[in-house]
Figure 1 (tube, rainbow, N blue to C red):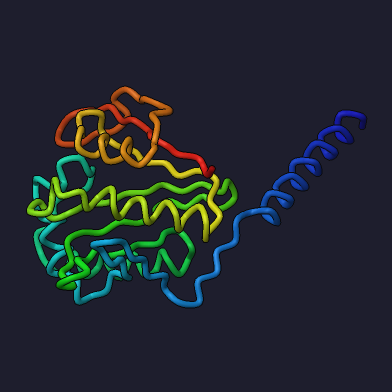
Figure 2: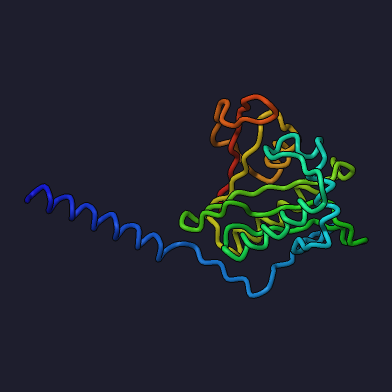
Length: 206
């Protein structure tokens, strides 16, 4: 009987702890999609009319070299992906933006918060650009706007990014934005017919 009482008491304490974490979890209310602006860029919601550009990125071996998903082969796959983003946003699992040039409105990439862990006030960020816009400083410019919004407006405490260690370009973007490497996992993913290492970079709210 004493063992049963202790077990029930521990179970109740665990349940109470879970309830407290749920009550204290980060709440995100976005009546309208948040549009962000930088000196050269305008970040807006990704919509179905972006399917051509999304397909161009997700069908490019250069763009997808460090992203462990199969290359897209049809525009309909990009459309399905955009619709899935909307569903995940409705479920408060992610927020995704299209990166566009302020002067022309041309879409050049995507960026967002993915795998949002609201109970831990933490989220993962990720981004991709069309190859012709590499090396122009657009990625860190967009990421800095996202960090400011994530910390100041949404209230995240930490933001992480998961990259392959040989993705030097992404590493430089993260370090330029204040991220530090906090973990390294050997052969933690299978991609391109082989096991690859991953590194986690993160940044904390100031």
